[in-house]
Image (tube, rainbow, N blue to C red):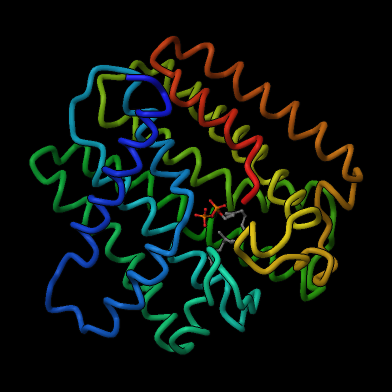
Length: 294
Ligand code: GRG
């Protein structure tokens, strides 16, 4: 199978798995189901589940990776719904559509996010219950990456910076971006590995790879915030400028930011080298993301 076909197969399977699992319980109120699925199927790139599947194909497969991929996309979508709320970024556009709270209302958006966050852990518990050791390890990875020291903690620190409650520095910004973006990227790769017969040395490599790829992804996000148009990128832009946020672009200029994105992309590709031929899909994904326009 060529790699473009493989991407399409992965994408189709991710959509089918999301359809199957969300929501897990048919007793979920109709309005809540609608709000959860509205953001989940609004046309995201599915980069995190694709990374997980990319890591899951490095070694011989032990367990089906798709439920873990569903869990990660649920967490990511919840974080976007909550990030867009008036109390946070107050964004009107996401994935090319009105944000969840604009389409429904604020309370519904909060609850849809809460339900997706909770569902992620239920999916893992249910799908991997016959392999409790792996289920626990997957839960730990996801909980850590989504929790108070990483995703939520990074968001908290970001808001504190915006409110002027803490000192802006490049180091603080890098730490926040690693927490908000990098930690989940690392978790995707580790969770993918956990569904395979992996070697400990690979665990260290994917950790470095996830961090580096997360940084590259973030710098490209900063660039798109400046050079992109909302119709193509599909979300509210110029928020960084509006919020006076220090980014790779404000610190190093556009040209400097492109150079950093290239360097980080190359570093991520170098990490893939250590994972051998099995990492060819991850290499492809990293190259594709460098050229992304949304
Ligand atoms: C509210 C707990 C909480 C966390 C919010 C993820 C996040 C933290 C904020 C989103 C804002 C942002 C610009 C984050 C950094 C980059 C990023 C995660 C972009 C969105 O991810 P994509 O590009 O989105 O993968 P799609 O829509 O393609 O899934």
